[in-house]
Image 1 (tube, one colour):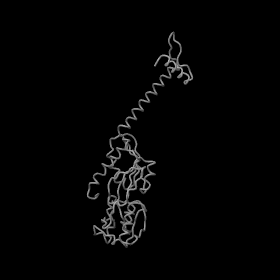
Image 2 (tube, rainbow, N blue to C red):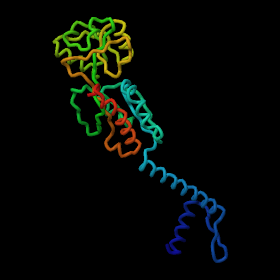
Image 3 (cartoon, rainbow, N blue to C red):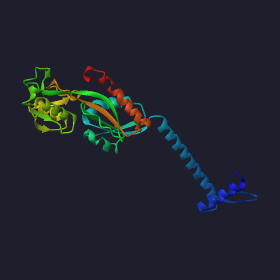
Image 4 (cartoon, rainbow, N blue to C red):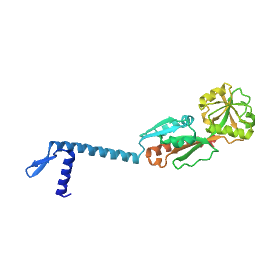
Length: 276
């Protein structure tokens, strides 16, 4: 810049500051007390900008920061400990919340979350949504569970016709387990007699174990030792785990790290015989 250009800039700065910043010093000028104070503040501002630039570069180049996750409870119980173990040591904090909502609510959930773990019946076609990117993780079989003293407890496999006269403990409509129950109705021609609808699998297990009915449950969600698990014949019964994000969310390194952690977490399950 020429001396005159510098002089003009200094005059503009003095007008913006509202106080004199320079004073005569023989043939030269020097900073006033206000001018020296402004220099110190300018140094602080420039240092803050440098720190901000460095932090933004860190976010661009390496996983860093908070990623908000919504997941259905049984999926979180199965995968969240594994995902957190995969992220251990990274400067990424996964902030998880449970949201027990059907897949139709995914788009709404992405207004508040970076990643949504959801599930759907494996015979339900994926409905494309330009505002949502869906990644398939794995398939989990859905089995029939009965009490240890149930008439079918000595079996390992059960046909839908054998269940036609049972009382059912099921989940609310719109979820994968209930979709399988509708498939049983189609095969048998008999509408299942649902006595309770609950979305907490621990409660469902307790009711079945104490003889209040039979139920369908995802295979890896069964924990009660009092239950007998039966494979369902003649009906394709399973649920598909999916991760949903907004388009291009993976460009943020922290989100990409969480997606990779989920992929690593499901690998042992996806490779197992039960998952195929």
